[in-house]
Length: 126
Figure 1 (cartoon, one colour):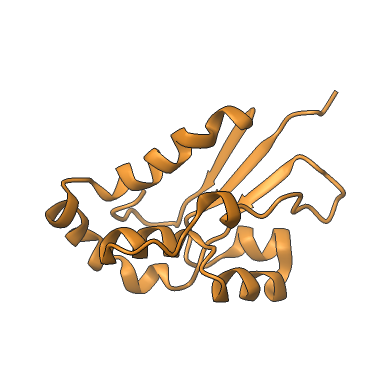
Figure 2 (tube, rainbow, N blue to C red; figure 1 turned 45 degrees about the vertical axis):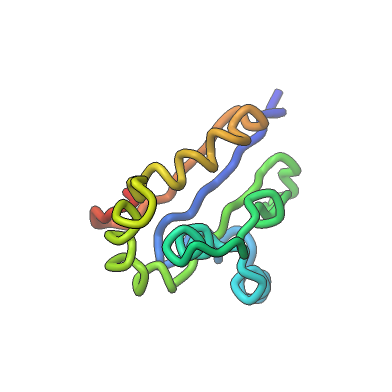
């Protein structure tokens, strides 16, 4: 009955959804291996290729034994990159919101639901 695939994308630099789903140790591992949503935007701003959505998505993240719940983790570094995101259109003619949209569109068919946790204030991504 509950066999739906769910993908949580945490865009909140407070990382509450991320920490709740995977804990701080797992988050630190993703952060140090460039596997957070921050690294997606950082790649676009700096014209690098360190981020891979395929490897960034943490599979089966629930401590409730829900095998169909995946996560794209957030990062506190999103706070520091907000101002730099204004540079994305100048460098590549792409809006910051389009960067995430393009990545979502590549794999959205694998999921029944995509939940996006946004920060409590509006920014260039949200």
